[in-house]
Structure formats: C-alpha cells, structure tokens
Image (cartoon, rainbow, N blue to C red; front, side, top):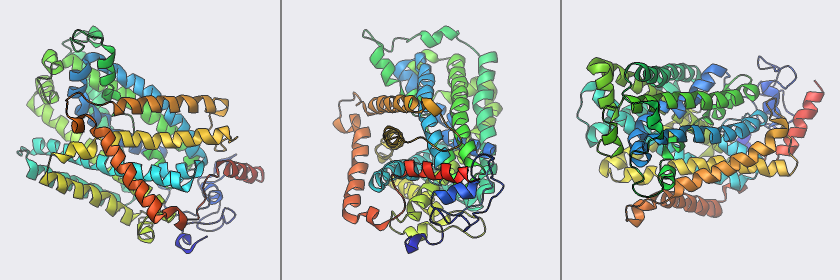
Length: 520
C-alpha cells in the first residue's frame, strides 16, 4: 500500500494488525468486527464505543422530524393544503427501499464515511469521488441552514431581536457548541444524540398526541380537503408540488453508517438502526404534522399563505406562554443534536475520503486523535466551512436560498449513486456477504429503490412558477454548479490517480468474506 495509508490501511490478509484479534464484536457465524474490517483492507482506527441504540439516535436526530416539520409546515400547507400530509407516508415508503439497499451494502462494507466508500467499492474511484463531492457540499450547506434556522429558536427563548447580527452570533454559537461536544469523543456524541432523541420524541410524538387529544379543532376528514389550493384546475399538479412535505424529511438514516467503525457489531446493527430511523421518523412526523393541522385555529389562513410561521401561535394557543417556552427549550435541544449529528457525519465522510488519499490535505484530514479516537481535523473543517457560509449570509442574506436550494437534491443524487452502484454489482452477479441480507428480494428492492429515487429527483427538480428564471430553476442551477466544479477538479487534479485503495470489488470482497467465514 502507499505510504499515506500506512497507519490505517492494511492488506486484506493482515488482520492481526491494529487490533485484528477476535474481540467483543464477534458475531457467531460471522467475522469479528476487526476481522471484517481487515478483509476490507483497513485496521481499527476508532474506539467502538457507540451502542446500537446510540447509533439509531444519531441517525434519528440527523433526520430530525421536529426540525423538518417546523420548517416545512407552512410551505406544505400553502402549496397543497392538508392532504400534503400523505407525502410523509409516500416518501417514507420510498426511502425505506433505499434504506434496505443501504442495509445490505453497509452489512458487507461497515466502513467509516458511508456514501463515499460504498460508491467506491460498488463502482469506481472517480464515481465515488463525485458522489462524495456532491454529498460533502450538500452536508455542509445543510449544517449551515440548520444552524441558521436554530438561531431563531435561541433568539425566541432568550427574548432577543432576530436580525442578521443575532442570527450570525447564535448560528456560530450552535456550530462551536456542536464542535466542542464532538471533540470530546464518540461517547459524548452518543450521549447527546440520545438526549436529542428524547427531545425529538417529546417534541413531536408527545406534543402531537397532546394536540390531537386535547386541542383538536378540525375533524380528520380535513386531510382529504384540498381547501381550494387547486383553484379551478386539477389537484394532481398541486399535490406533486406539495411533495416537499416528505422529500425534505427522510434523509439522515445513512448517518448510522457514517460512524460504522465506531459501532460494535455494525454489520448487523446498522441496517436495523437505519430502518428504525425511517419507521420512528415517519410515525413522529405524522403525529407532529397532523397535530399542528388539527389544532390550528386559523387553518384556512395558513393554507391561503397569510401566516408565514403558524406554529408559535398554535403552541401559545394550546400550551400557553410558559408551555410554548418549554417547547422552545426542547426544540433547541433537538437543533443542537441535529447540528452535532450532521457535523459527525460530515467529518467521518471527509476522514474516509482523506484516508484513501482522495482530497487535498489528506494526511492532515485523516488524522485521528490518540485519546478520544475522533477525526479532529475533519471535524474542524465540518465546522469551519458552514461558519464561513454563515458569515457570507451575514453580508448578503439573499444567498441563503441560493446556497441551500441544491442541498436536498444533492443528497438524493448521492444516495441514488449508491443505489445504482449496488444494482450494477447485482447484475454482475454480486451476492452480498454481510450477515444482514435481503436474500432473493435484493434485486427487486434495488430496482424499486432506483425507480423511487429517480421519481423523487424529478419532483425536486421541477421549476417554480414565479416568472424569474433564476428563482424558478435555482435547485438545478445549484446542483449543476456543484457538479461542474467537481468534474473540473476531478479531471484536472486527478485525485483518483493518487489513491490505490480498493475499488469495484464487491464481488471479490463477498467471496473473501465467505472464504474467511468458512475457515472459522
């Protein structure tokens, strides 16, 4: 192997190095965690201190239905009316297919970084570089937007006037707080993720049930009432436009795989954590969205677009001033945990990218601290880049929409690059060798996941109707800019030539895992 991988990257036969002995992650009829990692060409770099429960909490707080529903309620209702809630179920089912594919992939490739190493082992170095580039950009922008939006909650809690100065200071404070917690190690990341999980469950399921039971002002039939959103035309185009009610919610489950090398028995546990993230996220979002709609005293005005931020008035009317403040505190805990999880996911992706020598400064970015066993330099980048965008937004808040518009489409594209890679390998004869498997259903689920993903990306790419070319096509413009910049760098700098880590080896790895297992 090349010298830049000498500490972390080992040939598949060298499973005695870097903790390659049988360990607490021994899995009965499957390889131990260290043996499995050695077959993939790596040695242990991290401390496996994250439990399956904490792994689920990490994915769930990244998905964050509380943040998503709060952000989307007014837009979804003004676009498609109360029936927009059905997109939560539609998208949850589609993303469940994607999560099933990811589950088989991570079960064979439980490697830190998720999207990047999966795409590399399923296709090629160049393909993986583009998938990782798009996903890193999307993650950094998502971290920025969550920090910016969370600053509004902090300002409300402390009675501060929300302007560009307080937004900048509070947004940066959220980023630095998350960085400090991440710097303390995986154990603290897991602890705060669990706290964030409970805050999310209280804020979405608990509050949603309270609103449904005690504060309901409308009948359940309202979810079949378009409330005039279609005008005199067909409701179908309007309903398609309301897809954001679900499309902006169900990602984050892949973060469970980003920290695969920090989880005990990841080949079995992470696929289950991903699926649980989707199931619990869907239930939470339904309770939350449904509760707000049924408890809204001014639902007609919200659907008409006359109320820009309806949730505070719903909460104050239902919970009173003190209750609304308590909810703000719960929401802030959820925002902190969401930023924390996003930073952790981004840093592990950057680390994995750098460990294979695929980006500038790879030696520095791939360093892991001796004590806390975290990629501290990659974490610094995952905090600094969003902070710089926050500063740019302070200078010109008009760029917030422009820089965030492509993020969701970019995430979906990166996901589908993995789904397409998995399907390619299956058509070549790949039979996943991880302990978690879909067996004969794998190829059917894979085709369905790809079809759903293409459908979702088409919906996300649909232009607006404002009449302004830039405003209407901003989502695709943002993605095209990111893709063009990435392709220019890829073909000029040729980072793929600087890395000799494995690629396109899913079939070979599956055979190696089965051979190693047969000798046990």
